[in-house]
Image (cartoon, rainbow, N blue to C red):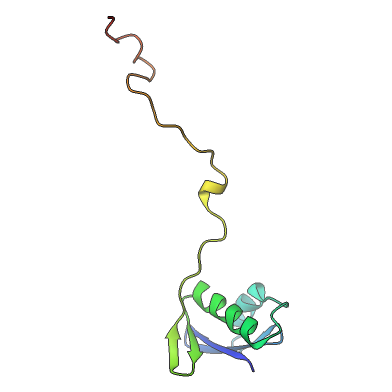
Length: 102
C-alpha cells in the first residue's frame, strides 16, 4: 500500500521509495526528501508523515486528512556552538578596576 499526502492543495503518493505527483515542482521537492529504504507499509507511512510535516501538509488516514506534525530539527545550533559558562559578577572589561578592596 502507498502513503498519500496533500501539500499546497496537491496530492502526492509515496510508494516503493519514490514520490508520484502531477505537480513537477512539488514532486522534485518531495524526491529531495525521498527515503529509498522505506519498503514496508509502516516505513512508507513514517516517511510520508515526515515529508508532509516538513512542508506543513496533511496525511491521509483511515479517518480522513489529518495535519502532519512538524518534525524535530535534525541539526540544532547547540550542536555547533560551545557551551557558555555563566558570567561571574564584577567581571568584564572595567569590572576589576572599580572593585572594592577589603
